[in-house]
Length: 185
Ligand SMILES: [Zn+2]
Image 1 (spheres, helix red, strand yellow):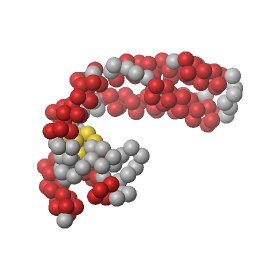
Image 2: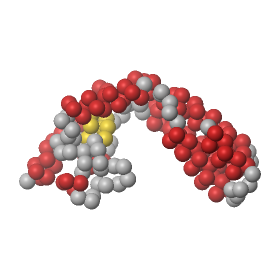
Image 3: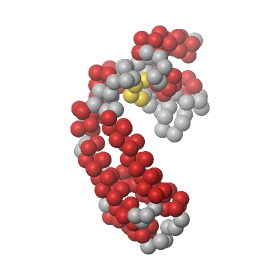
């Protein structure tokens, strides 16, 4: 929190000026703060972020761009939260335990195409975007249902990306087998 107060002071003291600059910096400050947070669950994380947002907004109460930017960020987070089951919301360790267990269950391979989570071997430089394409991702079997241990499998980035909300789980089991045949030739 100390670093955030220092950051907020930079806006308050007019060191950072201009509506756009203030808004962009405030968004950076809030997201950096979130990276430093160590919370036992998503609920307390979001609580802390709301407090941080208040501190930042108080630096320039009449700055609508900053207010809108920070509100947008928080609404995205709230949406993520709704997508996550209560068990994983209240205990982030439960999620990591599930992930590691599932990795072993799937022999470290995508549920659909049975290829490795690291896409480099079969796709080269394609499917390497930021942090994606390096490890298996969590895919919802029923994409309208929340993330939960019973509704998730691990899928590679290409499969997760292609399945999105367009193909059903059983569609993608078939598609995955075809991908596997083509890539293993
Ligand atoms: Zn796959």
